[in-house]
Each structure stands twice: as C-alpha cells, then as structure tokens.
Length: 270
Image (cartoon, rainbow, N blue to C red):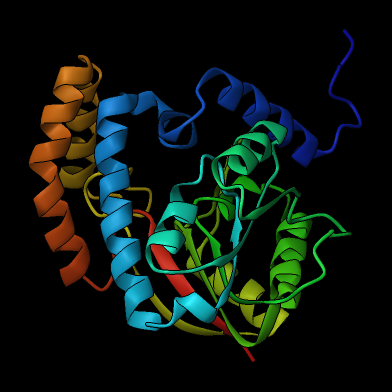
C-alpha cells in the first residue's frame, strides 16, 4: 500500500488542511472551533474580543504610531481589533492563499503576505513594535519548526518589542495530533527564553467556554461534555448557551490568574 504523504513536510499538510477548511468555511466559523457551530463560535469570539482588547489597552495607549504584525490573520478578526485600537501600520500574514486574498480585499491599506512563520526564509524585512499570534503556534506540530517560528518572531520585533500570543500551556503531559500540538508550560517557557524573550505575564483567555485541556478535574470535564452535547443540538442551542455563559466567562477570565483552557502570554524582546 502506497503512502501518498511520504516525504511531505508537516507544514505542507497543515497548509493544505487550512486551505481546504477555509475554502469551505471562510470566516470565524472556519478559523474557530468548527465542531461547536457558528452561533457558539460567535460568542467565543466575543470573549476573545473583550479580553484581548482589554489586555492590549493595558499595554499601550498609542498604537497609532506603532508598527504591528499579526501572524495567522485568518479572516481578519485580530486585524479588526488592532484597527479599532487606532493602529494604522498593520502587516498581516497567513499560511493560506485564500486568507491573504480576502484580507487584501478587506483591508486595502494594509500589507498581507502568504507566509509560513516557521520557514527558514521569511519575506518580511521590517521590524515591528508589536506582534500578535493568536491560536497559531500550537498548529506548528514539528518541534524544530516551532523553535524556528519563535526565532523568526524574535527577529521580526524591534528591540523592546512585545509579542502577545495564545497557547494551551498545559502543566502535565504534552499532547500531539496531526494538526495541533499542545505543549507544556515549561516547554513553551524554555523555547521562548532560549530565543531571547523575557516572559512578562501569562493570563487566561478562556475558562469554561473552551476545552479544559489543562485539567483532569471531573466536574469541569463533565461540564465541557454536557456543553458540547447541548451545542450539538443546533445553532439555537449554541446561541442560548453562548449568551448565557458569556458574562460568567468574562468574570472568571478577569478574576483568575490561571485557567484550565487557553491562555495568553506576553513576551518582550531583550
């Protein structure tokens, strides 16, 4: 039996996967947790918008003069946040051609490039004050490419530049699937410190509304199981569950130092 994927680069597989997925589901549903439906995903993105905007405002109040690079721009969700914060000099990149084409049409004043951030050669020559990489790095499953991506990001930042990104930061055992690698907090910290980054802080991005990948707790995993069952009953249920959980989620994310789900980390280039 012939293995048609023999010799294929892991990131080529990832690129093909995302090209197909976004061609079929371009937008927040395609870039989000696709198994949870459009309505519930829209509430997850409302959480992201509130939490990320609040965090970015706490970092800087003068984005109008800052240079921004958004990695894994997808359908432009985080580009919109940067724009709403007043940023004018925004560069975006994505591994897929469909995203880059749509982003160029949507934001004619921006610069958008088809780039694999884990490549040996990055066709971006300028440096940036801020780099964002939300829900991106854990899709780089190859560890050497993960390290290369971090090194590339470091080189793309100006001195004292800031990176803000999301990861799962599990405390126990790392997990890997074909298109996602959930690394441990210690592994991630070591990778970023080796590259030269100073880790500033780590804060929750989700608590109840996303998969509890960093918890073996019976109650929270039972809650997640029931949530997924409810959402799977249809878009109406997804909307009802999302809207009911939203205020609770915001309260938990803002009040807790750690979460059992996705978190954000802020790093500075020394």
